[in-house]
Length: 150
Ligand code: DQA
Image 1 (cartoon, rainbow, N blue to C red):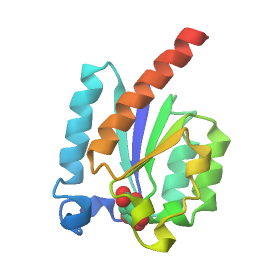
Image 2: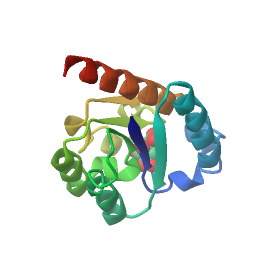
Image 3: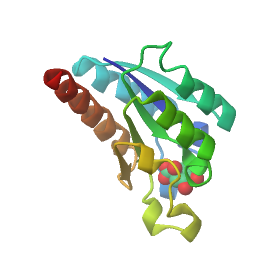
């Protein structure tokens, strides 16, 4: 089971960026935690972070070539604006889960809507970086259940 975790703009600054909102854990520490969880549940996890919309679109589009089964994505600021990322998720038809560290629904008005959530299985928002672990576990369960049904 191959799952990719994609992080959008400014998330390379995790740990330094507004720690009151996004916490003190760095992206490397988060990815290491997810690697440990993934190996404990038999998932092959990979990671991608980009500050460019096109880079994220290209990565999603390469999901077929990379034989990915699931996508966990925090599109960061592009959540609120990117039709291109939304279309890419819809195009590849690979199950995706959207994650936000903060509760986007409890912040500024412009953060409350997501372009991408409607083409994802669901959204986890406001659980801090734990949200990525729950998303990984939830995606693994979802894919397992799908396999059993087929
Ligand atoms: C975020 C929320 C977005 O509104 C913001 O632009 C981010 C991070 C989150 O994880 O809480 O960069 O996606």
